[in-house]
Length: 291
Image (cartoon, rainbow, N blue to C red; front, side, top):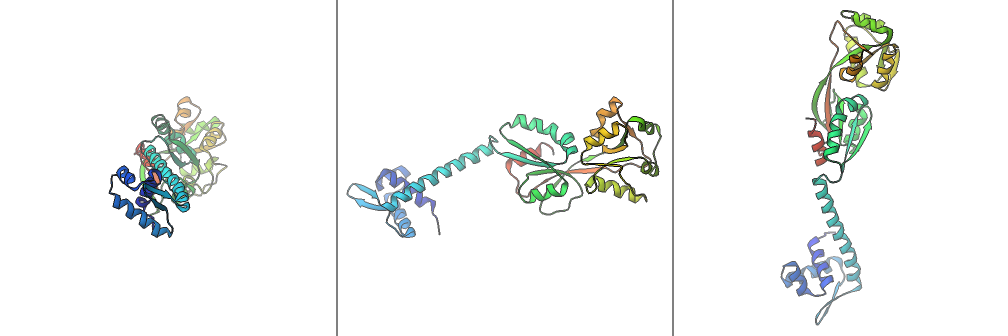
């Protein structure tokens, strides 16, 4: 069914003024234009909406019912326009973020704190999950922006490179003695107890590929889902942890951990921002704080 909102706007004015001429004056159009719109609307609906009187019009039963619904509908239109304006002015809305724990703490939180102060009315929603889940939820419209490591190849999302992330092996407790070694070989690393992220994570996969390229296979003594927990176990001397450098700078500075030097440079990770092709104004503003 074709809906002409202008016809309904004119009908609503007539229903309030009970007079075609007054409605025309109110809407700044001609009286014949009002009559034409009412006639077209009646033909479209297949009912009479008005009864013509000597000094105006009276709504029929159908007209009264329609007027009630049309008035509610125009109130909704106005509310929708007001809400859109508030979104444009960032006085309401939300940004839904997906990332993993290490990136949240090291990359997102410092910027998020400033964003939250600048836009206090924007609601922040955060999901900590693996890369494949984050990308899928962005495609499904359940998340607005994701912070994940490359590689990602998916034409259904927009991938924006952000920064290179340096990694290192760190040790604590009695294993700090290995920090005195000039450069640890790949073989020496494999002989030490390893504290790694759980199998299947991009970081773990990247490290396994790096070791495999040198002809070695690695096995984790301790597998965890959190770099913070990995660092805690490393500080207690349970093994050497593979972590983002920036995540352990404080522990290295305090002497709780030492960075292990390696014969070959450790692989870096390329951090990127993932969004949909039709991102919201709020998402674009949030993303702009990083790039």
